Amino acid sequence: MTRFVVAGAGLAAARACATLRRKGFDGELVVLGAEHHAPYDRPPLSKAVLRGDRDDAPLPFDVDTLGVRFRAGVTATGLNVAERVVRTDDGDEPFDGLLLATGAEPVRLPGSGEQLTVRTLDDAYTLRSRLRPGARVVVIGASWIGAEVATAALAAGCRVTCLEAGPAPLSAALGGEVGALFTPWWSDVDLRLDTKVASVDPGGVQLADGAVVTADVVVTGVGVRPATGWLAGSGLEIGNGVHVDEYLRTSAPGVFAVGDLAARWSPRLGARLRVEHWDEAGAAATVAAQVLLACAAGTPEADLPVHDPVPYFWSDQFGRKIQHVGRHGPADRAEVDTSDTARPAVRWYSPDGGLTAWLGVDRVKELVPARKQIADTLVALS
Image 1 (cartoon, rainbow, N blue to C red):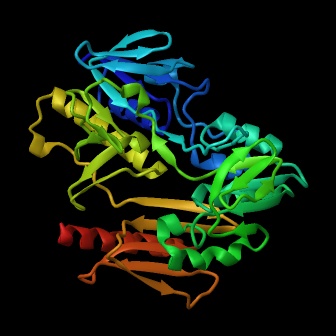
Image 2 (image 1 turned 60 degrees about the vertical axis):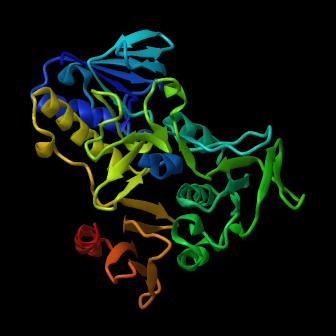
């Protein structure tokens, strides 16, 4: 293998290139990035960058040191597996090995009104410029990103309304009972629960009941979809993301997918997962690079590194840090600990009594033991 291409210029690209060079790959490295920015860290966008505490979040990615040909502002538009070529809006890019890391795209609601999101650095700059004292900001979705946007808007002196379709903040991710723990945090926001949005129109948001919420700024935070549109006709197996095995391999030889774009097989859970968090993208890209080199060297599959970590993410909102590790399902029982009301915790248990997930507020020291216990539980259940 002499030529490795990464489609997407985020954390995964930076980690993959660094790993390949560290492991001795001396071939050509090409990174295609639709944005006109070098790879940067996305979590700070909805936190420090949006608040104005910092202007960027660069990642270690020195093109000269790594020997990378970085094509900024070049969008991948198609993939021909048979010809081993990535189509772009600026010509074809041939490859021997390929990493798909184009991430996900925000879900947009019906309507002709402006909907801001916080997916890219330019998105964060645009929204930050609109957060002015007294501005009427409507956040659609009391989600992880919605809470972080609301936090920044309040700090900027905006009047914030949040429209949430569920019964509590974060209810889509955590359920109504657990989500209700966070309702008091929204006391400075006009939080409207069980509220369905019909459309985003110029000057405001129309609700399903016909009412209109006026707004100077509308931010949509109702989820993302894997950016797989450009892979139509490629022959890759695609469902809710590009399907990959536990080695991050797609259905095409030498083609890997990671991060928000990928739906990976988890042996420990016996299920396919799409994990939309920073920790996942970086770790998966490192493993994909290692697998690529191992396969090129003829390493037996049984000796390949496996990517199957316990999912983890965090969120900073309203002056607190929420950390979550594991994966809980509908059959799991949630045990809520409010003995310290300022620092609640939640533990989810399987029907067999094993710990499958943990959430803590400002309980950083409890994360590592919880993660180990969950890993042991999931191994036992697999």
